[in-house]
Length: 172
Image (cartoon, rainbow, N blue to C red; front, side, top):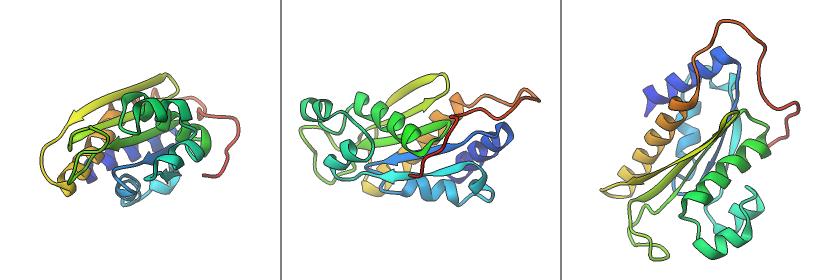
């Protein structure tokens, strides 16, 4: 997890771009992994831990209809979380996790079903993960895969240029 986080932090630092996280099943582990990297304060704006379903709507802006229709473990919910975190925290990138870590299925969704999503300047992507193992393994694997997804989207610096991102920042 740490090396993926370090790579993302260093690349975002080079680009002078920022990151926000919105977490459900990882419960802050993604944010903790990012801030473990020296220099993370240059890029990490903050994040939301929205473990309760109603907080996904209230804090991260996930549409209530989407949550009512599909539940919290859904690819479109993951995208809405990433977009909501990006917008709410005034960041260039939003990174989100949602899923079922167990030990029991949730809303007829199996243990190990996880969605990670990234929202950035050029759009969004969500990945479905079908993970095996216990809660700890599922949660750490979700963090690693979320960071890999972000890494796939963050472009290498082109050498010059002004920082990109929203024109204003709001606090998380």
